[in-house]
Every structure is written in structure tokens, then in C-alpha cells.
Length: 196
Picture 1 (cartoon, rainbow, N blue to C red):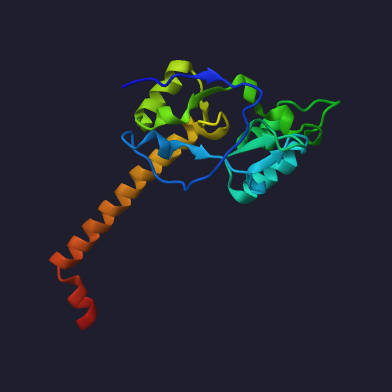
Picture 2: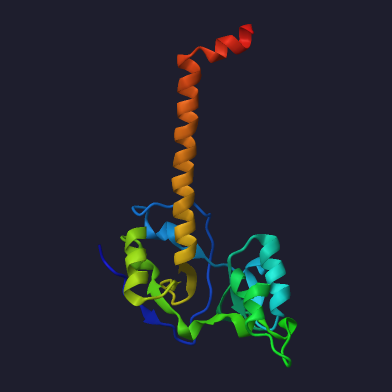
């Protein structure tokens, strides 16, 4: 097992492209674990948007993590849906600041606090390597930088673990279906239903 080399972003690194979401195992290629970015409006939240409004958008889209951009569509950071929830905002509410006064910018994880890995380093790495890297650098998120020096995606510990659980439950469902099918065939249940 190896850990990935991490580095800080510079001011010129911007966003790039997109792929489909799949279930994962520890042996899956690390590239499959990456959440790719593109410039679709549904994935970008303006930094000055009120946090409750952003939560409603993410909730409606069932989006767990979105990137945050400024007026010039420059990448500022990421925000998680649960960071914008009423429960999370309640921690910051006082007499001077109600929930609607907090913006996405107030609640985001800024890019300058995030570490990054090179996309080409993911080519020969596995999901297990990515998880080892999270532990090594004690972070839950790693940005992925392409050869042009642009942010092209995100590795998120929560997303990876959720997708690994999907793989486990999908295998379990297949096993249950196989067992039921074998029982039906061994007990001639299909014939009984047709003849009954």
C-alpha cells in the first residue's frame, strides 16, 4: 500500500470535467473514486448565496458535496449539504445572526485549506491507496489536479465509504436473489404456481 503525494493549490488552478458514479471496492482504481467537476450550473453554488437556500438546492438535487464559485466562476472551495442544514446553522445563530444571514462562503471549506493530488498519480493507485492517504494526511477531502494544473475533481472520504457500502449491499442483494431463485427451482415452485 502507498500514500499519495499531496500539495497545496496555487491561485491559477481552476476547474475542469465530469464522469458517472459507480460502486467501489478497496481494489477499485482510484480514478473511479474521483468526483469529477465540470461547469454545469447545478454543481456550482455562488459563494454569496444564503446557506438555507443552498441547502434546499442541494437537497432537491440529492447532492452531498458541491463546489463554490465567485461571480467570475472561479473555484473558491467546497461545501457539504449537511454543513448547510438547519442543525448545523443553529450552532452559529445568535441575536445578531439568524440562519439566513449565513452564506455558502461562510460555511464552505476554502480551497487554500485543502490538499491536492496529481490526477496522473491516481492512474496506478487503488481506492485502498486513497483511503490510506486520507489517514496519512488526516484529511477527508483531496482535490485532484490535471496535467494542465486545473482542479478536475475531488476525492471525498464520505463519498467513497458510501459507494463502498453500495457495492456491499448490491452484492448482498444479488446473493439473496440467487438463493431465492435456487429455492424456487429446487422446490419446483415455478411449476406449482403455473399449475396451481
